[in-house]
Image (tube, rainbow, N blue to C red):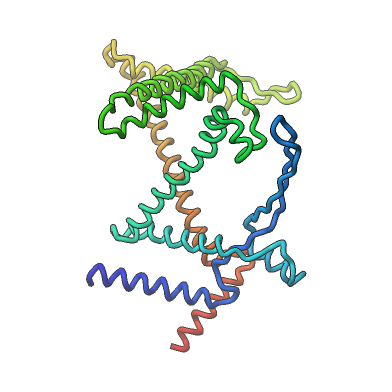
Length: 335
């Protein structure tokens, strides 16, 4: 069977199953929201009088909350059906299935989902960077009056140091954009060097404090750690705490010995180095296992999304599964 025909059959089966699911019981894949009125009081300043801003937010809720509210009052306006969230729910299901289709082989659906996800992610972080960084920090420091009037009335007035720093940042940003110019691309090397140098310096300090110093402090723990409750020493907690400290100190010394290459790893040094290798392998295995568990958790979350939020098959009472099984059984008997 050709791959194109295979894909046609797979898509047709999925469409048929989804159509069957939509016609059973309460249907599937509908999103509801709750109306929440918000307000904030803005204090008076040199350019504005005191005022109150009001707006309405719509928070996602479970379908059962909407159904309960409708049964209590058919004319209620607190909960409502959301077309935007429903369309987003269906798009999420489509892109999830498109990504899963790569398990079979590379295909146009997977490439479409990949391109859309990358593009949307880049656009999202671009917007977040603009409103969370450029507007409050750069524009808020260079044009505070305009930002106060049009965007953020509650933004505090910038200090002189912040204004000078933002002018410096703006100059570096313009120099960085020279990378796109036909000539003068060498100008962008200066802000790149500044960014890399400052980032390296900050990261070195943070890593020394969080890794090296923390590891050193943990190594200097007492080998015998007495655990007590109400001033009474407990035997087993003391044994386990002391054993953990001993293993930690032994592991640090053995790993340092393995990376000490000025002495041949022979005799006692070689045996200690081999113990260090065992510690390293256990550490790498635990890290790899943690990574695999994280990926499995992501997979479980997407599968739960498909069966719960999209297909509405997961519910405490199990009524939806019974309804679907009954309907499918009836259709098979009819055929």
